[in-house]
Image 1 (cartoon, helix red, strand yellow):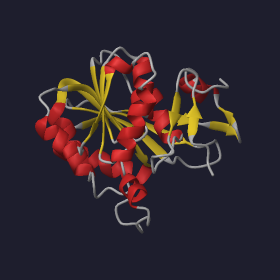
Image 2: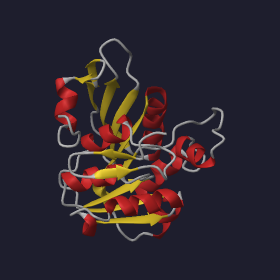
Image 3: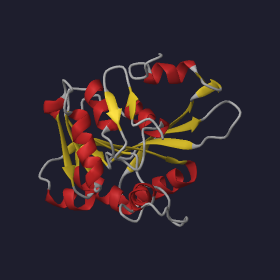
Image 4: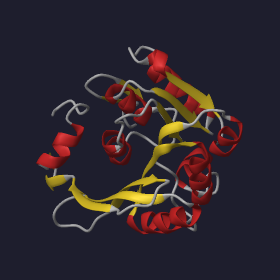
Length: 236
């Protein structure tokens, strides 16, 4: 049985009720997303609350975290309960589509570690299938609804596999959100990039392209990745 929690420097994330566990994608996005000048943040598909907690540690923003899975919402609330940032975080059981239709707020930063499988074999565990497959939150819905509730200078930040990420860039541009930053994320120096960190804004401008390599050898982080996540991982 896997460990029911993941211990960070300033908080513990229990994830035993969630289909998707704490992983490198969520941690990387939570450490990378630009919180500068963000007074309101929305975490779409919050799962255990990992990214919301990381952004709360990194900012003074008011944070709303939403998920369609009731067990994830329950667990995220439990993870937040004993933290000094509790008063700045609210967790809601809702789809992004419904939330964006009903909310009267705008957000300076929207983050999502979204589902990305479109045509692959479904996982027999329904909750894991929802978390991994995009039918419950098609990427076009993510983009359209993010644009609707972003503030004028707001940002949408996501992490996706490379192929899905490149498609997402095209989709977003068609809907009026433009890639401001693209980071090619390499697992190590020997392998091809596996993920894209992407930042979008309403105003079109040149897209800054950069690279991030996670490990220099097995179990040893590169200096750049260590710098990114040093405020979170225990051994850094």
